[in-house]
Length: 280
Image (tube, rainbow, N blue to C red; front, side, top):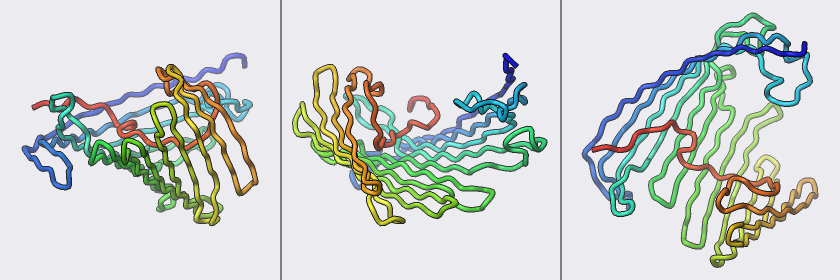
């Protein structure tokens, strides 16, 4: 039992269909110069053979120890709506809306050989991304449990650079759990004092408990190559308070030197599949 062997294989396929509409308008300030509708269906089959050593016989340290037999097909379809807008003196393609729907189908497996042994669809997932303006976008997600015929989780994010000084974000999250239903509202606001200093406030409120769950207050300082962040975090429910300091390299903003827990706003198009440029 020194070596644990796991064999897996898979195949993936996709297609792309699109149509261009010669339509232009500036209603409500939404600058539209032609429209392109792209439909991208995808399907991926993946199979993992029963490992030589069952995961139940291993001490679980990470996801590798939990690898078990799988026999699934992941199916999805993406609908994307694009237009052209002026960028650096040229008309370039931008996304207006993206709707993604996907689900996994598990094939029947013998009971005891894997965590899933019934033949059925898994969660039906929906994701809608909207960016009507360059300064505003919204991301909505929903997971439908096909076994219980009920919505499991749902969330709506709205984020925008309101002015050159203010950046605002809010999130509503619904989650159905065994212990009850959770309704959370998150608010995030950042104010730019000048080129060197910024401040930020973050709040999470639970309608179920009728109280704030988390509060964070951050001060940012630009040190040319680094951005320093000092944050105070409050958890009123547990009477907890803490603080931390992070130095983040401006060249690698996703690689901080330090540790923090905070609201991470969604980024438009991060979960979408790739697409070709908008060609006349």
